[in-house]
Image 1 (cartoon, helix red, strand yellow):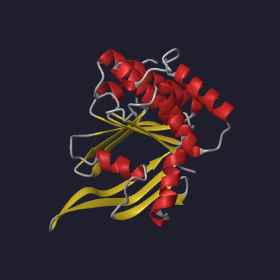
Image 2 (cartoon, helix red, strand yellow):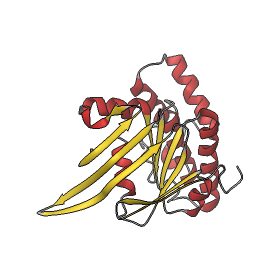
Image 3 (cartoon, helix red, strand yellow):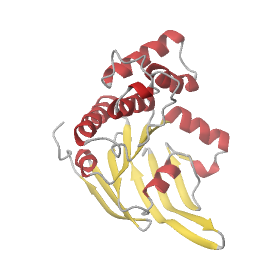
Image 4 (cartoon, one colour):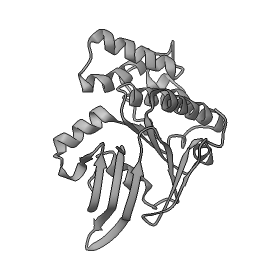
Length: 235
């Protein structure tokens, strides 16, 4: 079964009396374990599509199935549960809680799931921080970390609950090219080892080089869907 199925998905925003179409009939299937990049010019609908898939918004028309569930049929509480338990988010602005340490930012995400003992939580948090290269930095707060380190915390936070899907909106936008490559390599490794599905929204050619599937979106429609056996770069 596909992890995601979008059928005729539209999204129209109302600005006063004017209707502004953001998505104009998206048909898309994403299998579990994909490493996919969504690209296109600003205003093309990338973030809107991620918001719909991430249960942050509902489509105006069409159907979105997540792991076989029709998202339109779910209540706000049920959508929140899917976000909390099955979807990880990585933002270009990191969205870390400034008063919490790296450890506490990651711990917060897994405690929301509320399925693990304190011992299991500590093991999972320490394990994922080590996996993204932050061993020894667990007690630093965001203002004591570099941009790349903050993004690694964000990756760890997204992955610690072992979600089925990770959505990354411009994850390299605030990073230099060397740090971007390091962060992308971490995500590619997690994708291979954990089988987590990743969908990126980006303008960055480096992110596109890492992808195994490229989706171009323009004016709210998908204009290119290209798959390849391996990413361009060598991991």
